[in-house]
Amino acid sequence: MAAVFWPEPVRQVLREMSEREQRLILERVERLRNFPEMYPLRSKGPFRRCRWFVAGNWLVYYRFTGGAVHIRALWPARIPWKAAWKRTAD
Image (cartoon, rainbow, N blue to C red; front, side):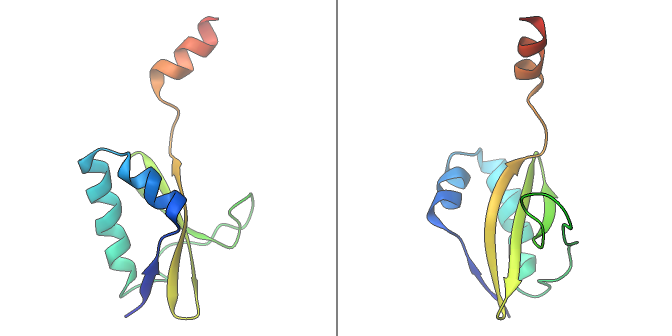
């Protein structure tokens, strides 16, 4: 069973989310303990060589090295509609 490590800045982002979003992310991360290589690897971009999955409105990036899962980032999967509309209206 793989250990999971969360850097403090990522924990901070997680704590600021709704309970529903937290639960979705934590449930998927828990599966990584038994199946750490189940998600695809990114081949390009700032998170290349990281694995990733979608949990609600978030992309979760992680690396599996040395028998441990290291959560790297929580990234919004989409721009909130109101914010996108406001930018185009200006």
